[in-house]
Length: 312
Ligand code: SF4
Image (cartoon, rainbow, N blue to C red; front, side, top):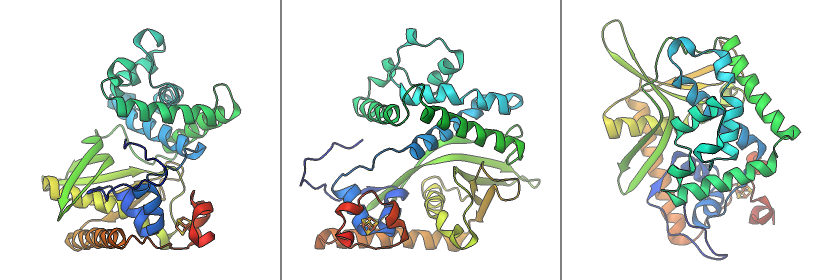
């Protein structure tokens, strides 16, 4: 977590970028300025709370041995997972639920451990306070978040979207980072899998979970931007070129629930030049101290619309 700024203060241009910040710039340079240079935060919402809980459940489903990765066990993670997100700072003697205890052990979410990193602790506490405000304990909002994530779990198993008992991920929440010119790019991959083909070759797959509906065909390519950057980082950092990128939609069905894209040399070259091009444009905006607005349909969901000159 970065230090918060006083009104009017500006941050120096970062030399480390994540795919989501690069996406901000692609979407609108002014948006990038608000978030990255002026350090203005976007508030947590019920949707972000639900998304965080959903990711936590799908990450920890793989803590179970293969045969125990069932719908019931996945569902049993939802309420304790919400407790973790809304009360990250519990001490050992405050937790009696065995599943919550197990989740805290695997996530390192005990106050005794969190205190070692005060930035991380305060960001988790801030987020927890937001979630408790949006969905107070015992409220209908809280019940909705929990039941919506349970429904995603139910659908994922009922529609047989993936066979989680048949494989173990190579990694979850895998950090990847590489140097591209004078820029460091980094990010976290939801899930990294490796499969051995019959001929003994290793095929790597990057998977990303999505709470929404699968994109319409004309927008599908755009949805892969972040994952393409992960594929590039994986090859730059570890020499591994993934075979495919997979967007996983637990709300969909067996046919539409996995949207894939094949990774090849041409895609890697294109992604690298796209990231470097974005970086050059960012540096130009910074030098000229001019971050243009880019009005589009997505402005309707932009938190900064009220202060944006395009809407003055
Ligand atoms: S409202 Fe639109 S133009 Fe303004 S900052 Fe947000 S995305 Fe950019």
